[in-house]
Length: 401
Image (cartoon, rainbow, N blue to C red):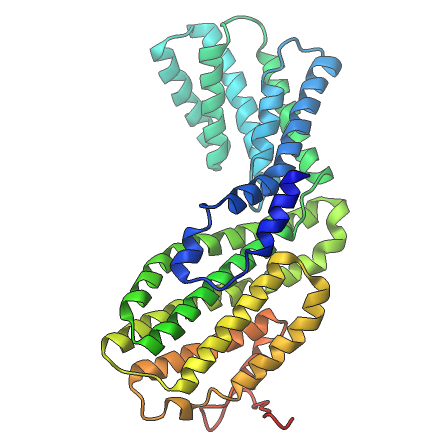
C-alpha cells in the first residue's frame, strides 16, 4: 500500500513543463521512476512466479520427473520476452531449448565433458539450428541448452528425454500464461505516447524560449539530448505491437481490439511530431546563430503547440477517458484556431529559416490533429492554404465562429 501511495503522490508532480535536457535526464534518475518501474514489472513478476511454479508442478507431480530444472527455467525465459510476435518467438525459444538439451545430452553421452567437447557441442548445435530454422532465437537457445547439459549435468544419467520434455513443458506453460493472464494491451503504449509527446513539448518550449532570448547554446544542448529520444519512439512501436498481439491471442482482451487499433492509428502522427520538432529545432539553431529572428506570432504559435502537446501527453499518461472526452474537443478547437493563424503572412519578409520554422509548425499542427482523431485530409484542410489550388479545400474559422 505504501508503494502505491508514494507513486500516486509522485505522479501528481510528474507533468510539469521541463526543458528537453531535464526531461530526458530524469527518466532513470529519481525515486518516482524507480517506483514506476517496479509497478510496471509487477505483472511480469507475477507471471514468472506463476509460470515457474506451474511448470515445476506439472513436471514433478504429473510427469513424475525428479529434477525438472528446465521446466521452470523455460517458463521464465518465455515470459521474459517483450514486444510483438511473442507467441512466435516463444515457440522458437521452446524449440531451440528442447533441441539443444536433446543434442547436448546425446553428444555428451558419447564424447564426455571438457573444453573440446564444449567446442563440439556448441558448433554442432549451431549447425543443426541453422538447418532447422532461420530464427536466431533457435540457434541461441540450442547453443545455451547444449552448454548447460555439458557443464551442469553428468553424462549418461539417463535424463535426456526427461529434460527435453521439461523444456517443452516450461515453454507450453509460458505460452498459456501469456494467453490466459494477459497484461493490459494499452498501458505500455499509452505511456510511451505520453513520453514522446512530453519530449516534443519540451523541445518546442525550449525553441520558443531560445527564439525569444536569441540563445543558440540552449537549443544546441536540447538537440544533443533530443538525439536520444529515438529510443522512446522505438519503445512506442514495440509496446503497440505487443498490445496488438495480446488482443489477438487472449480471448479476455478481444473487446480491446478497437482501442488497440486506435492506438496503432496514431503511431505515425506521434512519430512525425517528434521528427518535425527535431527539424524545427535544428532550423531554429541556424536562425539564431545567423542572428535572424522570427515574428512574435510565430513564437506564440510554437508556445501554443508545445502546451497542446503537453496536455495530450498528460491525458495519455493518466488514462483519463472522461477527461479525454472533454479535453480533446477543446484541444482540437485550439489547433483549428492555430491553423487559421499560420499563413505565410506571419513569416512575410523573413529569412528562409523562419519560413522553414513556419512550415514545420504547420506540419506539427496536422500531426496533433491526427492524434486527436482527425483524418490527415481534414487536418490539412484546417490550415490556411499556401497554394492557389490546395489539395484539400480549407476549413478555416475565426474568432467569430
